Image (cartoon, rainbow over all chains, first blue to last red; front, top):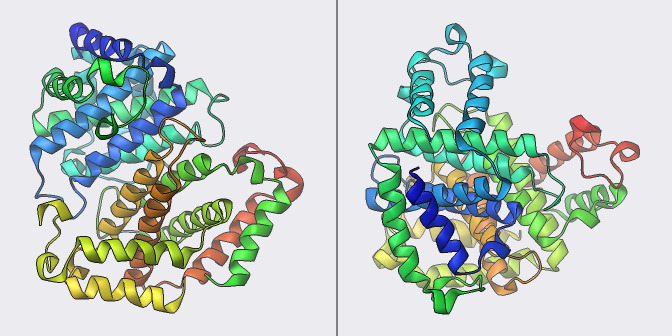
Length: 106
Length: 106
Length: 106
Length: 106
């Protein structure tokens, strides 16, 4: 996300004095709630979805993720790379290639 | 997210031939599943959480969001700014300040 | 659910002194968390799922729903029938037959 | 749930020819989606919630759970008791009493 987009999200919250509602737990709930509005786009069909609606709901997930990163003082690239270290170890290419199994079943 | 982090996520999927599983619907399910692993960090307490665990689960949400952006050919800043346009219109500062009500109750 | 099953769930909570954790909000989180463990059974395939795992996760959802009914003093048949009244009005047979559209699109 | 309530749910689906949409995967998505509409009642506050709204959303979760039980030919009491057997073994009273820790941390 570009720095100006991040600043816009922060300003939106600041202008409305909504930081008081943004506890980590409330933001975690919000990410799940928005993720399920996204999922609702695919509730009855995997292929017949409204792309404009998908874009809006995915954006909502991303905004709340950004709010939580901010609230906890986290760096997005740092936590993602740290998790990718683990994913790469848990799912070695030779074992995981072409298989959707969970790591403990490989 | 930095370009090198994005590339790492893409390479991870490519190396394992997992793109075949990454339908938009499956990725939407995955975002919800990971969002709920994040929520589980706050299941019984809003304040007593394991930050390291939170970082991992939030990273998982962000990775699947990136996968879905890629799969649908979307630009993160574009969809977020487009949604922020709507949010700013739905929640005018003078009405929404300090209130957690949904826009249709303001 | 049979009365003896309901009593078993209540006894389980009572014996462990877990009622203190069972706020309505925590139970709502728990229902979502378990619903997503159920969803995980279908993460990468709609048809190739582990039925035994599905049964366990669906049971977990049902147990937390029962906990929430109890906590709020609700009668399952009453709230379900009350909602079915609304569903039947929102989705008239002649309009909704064979269509998965949301009521506001019928 | 009483037998007449169960029959009403079945008739509702039958009259609208909606069984075609009720794959196990779609019902699992639906349970998660409704669970998150329930969670939304507690998004910004654990204590200040609209009980009527909670009742409706919990009813929606229960209806989709019933649909999934039907679709898979499952007996609610059987799967819940089978899961309670496991829960009782995983959370022995002497270890779990008054603690919200997951079983692998007891």
